[in-house]
Length: 478
Image (tube, rainbow, N blue to C red):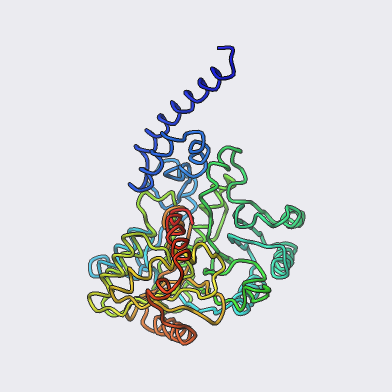
């Protein structure tokens, strides 16, 4: 055992044994058949490459996350005491008479549709941040601020200054960001917030080095702002100058946020509370009284989803809404990389005569994901799905309209990352007037689009088509 060759063989043998052991783990805990097979083959044949990759990307579940909505879990006593369940008077749906497809969404969300809400569509960056900054200026108790990306640029500094002013006025301010989404932001930017009394945390900040590294593929993609438990802002915009059309090439930027007031805000701050508890171990004292914004307000459901869910909540929710549609399914989404179930749901909807439209960007901000999107055009358009290429700038909104009443605005993309790997939040609105408003907005966007079909892919060179198919293979981690 003194020769270098003998030591090398010993190390290789140990690596292959470790690869076999981890392959067994992948077999027992893999989430999809395709992914499990790929991991097993890699771990058995090339463990010296696959083992470190599996340590980062191979975890089947995001373990250890605490959810205040699971009242049956004994570990949640402190959180559950902080959260008052909605009273029957706040529920918008009668469990005995409501459409079963809406009740299914409630069960997936573990939260109800609530009545008495107001909703305001916010189109693009200026309108969104003007509304957020105005709402923050009115806060008197606390502000909860969560974004996937917070850049130290013009809008980022404006946000910091606004938060510092509220903190100096005695308002409690909590800021949560994702390490990967905000990796380019210097630590000094957040340190300055802390120096002014603002509580700031990265999503995995308090975890061990191994936990942070092993959870790098799981990202918190939520964008939530809550003021005093009365008003919330949810949608597609992060904090960055590009979202206001200030990027040298990614401009103009088309995005959608929504401002809600009413009992639904409790669900938004509950999502923040759960994330903050994971990040810091703290339970925040918040106002859980339900403030009705309007006696005739619209029903709203808050749908937080993530890799900690027992079920594939995000994919199931969108699949349910598509499968239940009888008139139209209009989708605007920048990262259209659907799994087999969502693809089949869209195809079947089109085949049964539903007006299925999918709007994708013509000018992508992530080219690999966009190329993967192109690979789906022949499959969906063959079934009658109409695909539109947005050509008036970068389209980043995550908006859907289903039939005449049901709409969604949120952070989730139609891809595996949002379905399985990211923490997301979606608001579902059940109201014909709001659905008409959202549909009218999308009609204006469709006018800035070009209808496309399989020819967008088939007319390109063989090398481009090969690259597109290669991008599709990366769909599980894009």
